[in-house]
Image (cartoon, rainbow, N blue to C red; front, side, top):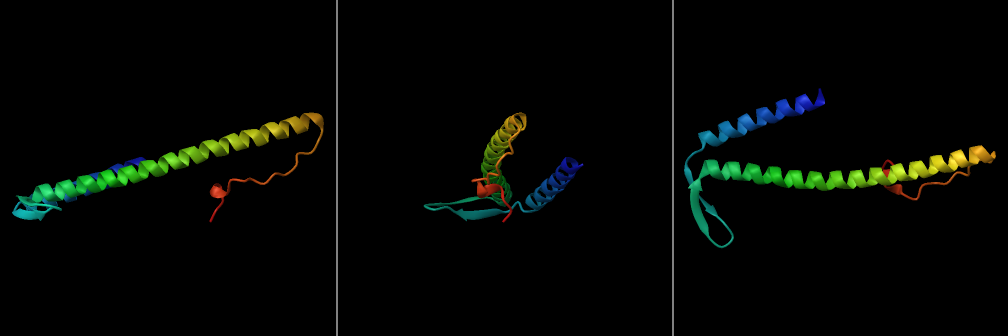
Length: 108
């Protein structure tokens, strides 16, 4: 259900941007760093939306990579704790409490 909501919202936003871009077809002068050029406003709008989407996607993929890496580290830590606990259970010893040294998963 959550994925469908994102798709529907995305389609609505794309339609809104397309309608906005199509209604603005006048030629405008765009000043770049070292030169200026005249181009249709529709291209400027669509290019700006495209670049914004690419920047957001790049930032999101970096954050996703960080979260996956942290998740993998936490799974390894959990497996080590479970292994240690099962070894102590077999020998009859009580497992010592070891606080985590990774503070990134605690709530802030």
